[in-house]
Image 1 (cartoon, helix red, strand yellow):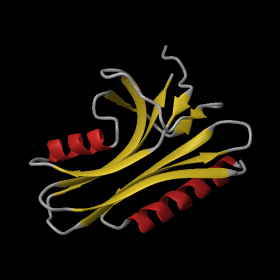
Image 2 (cartoon, rainbow, N blue to C red):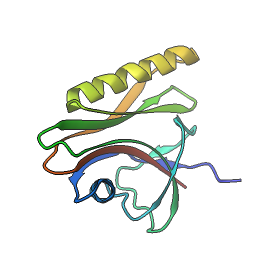
Image 3 (cartoon, rainbow, N blue to C red):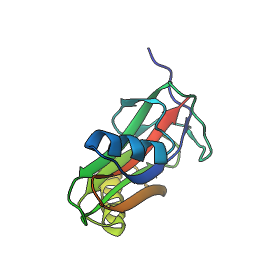
Length: 152
């Protein structure tokens, strides 16, 4: 059984590459998560998890992470990615991810709407939101990525 993460941060970055994979890898690097192994998880922030924006995760670590990304090879196209964490007063939080062919403002608005709906569905009061977002204008092959890494 895996331990329950105790810390988290939000990150968002855009990058270019010569291929889709290197664009994605370069976005991971720009977002400070390029040297870890991602274990994609669904969208619940554990109760009591502490926000640590300066968190450094050791290279090679296996890291639970909620993320969204988009890759485009259409020069000039605007792409965006966003993540948000919604906080309850005294229990777990909810993480939402979004990526699309749009700008940062639309991505953030979609995150806010999804968090509001998630808390309404759970019949829990939403007391705070943290969002990280990025928009990227594609030059050759671009990636926009946003993520919430969880750590121990």
